Image (tube, rainbow, N blue to C red; front, side, top):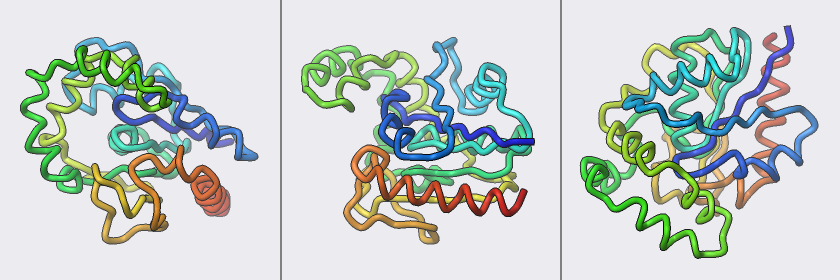
Length: 209
C-alpha cells in the first residue's frame, strides 16, 4: 500500500509554510491546516483529530515543524506509521529553550489578540500566519508544553533536520541533518536543503517498505 506523507505546521503558522517545499519535491506532501479549535488542552487530543479528519492510517509517514512535529510524534503513538520526520522540532519538552518553557504558564494571561494585531501589520509571511491563528488555541498549546511526555512509546523510525541557529528549540545531540545557518523555520529559509533531506528520507522509507 502506498504511503501518504503528512506534514503539520508549527504553532502560529499555517500550511503556507510548506508551499515552496511542496513545489520543490517530486512526490506529494499532504500539509493539513490546524483543525478548528474545539477546546483541546493536550497534544494527544489534537493528534486524534488529525488522524480522524485527515485519514492518517497505518504505513503512512507523518511529520511536522515545531509543534507540528510534536503532534506527529503523538500520532505515531496511536497509529503504526512508517516513519516520523521532524523539521525544526523536538522529541522532549526539555529541548524547548528554558525561557520559553518558563513563560508557558503565563500564556493564559498574554494579550495574544493584541500581539496578533501588532505583528500582523509586518509584511512577512510568518507574521501574517501568526495573525490569522486562533489565540485560544495558541494559549492552550503553549500551556501544555511542560506536560508533554515526548517521544516515549514511539517505535517508528525517526528522521530529524534542525537549524543550528534555532532560538526556540535546541538542536538534538543526535540529528540526521544540521543546517549551520538555519534558524527555527528551515522549511522557509532553507527550502532546497529541506527538500534534499526529504528526498533522502523518502528513498530510505521506500527501501524499508
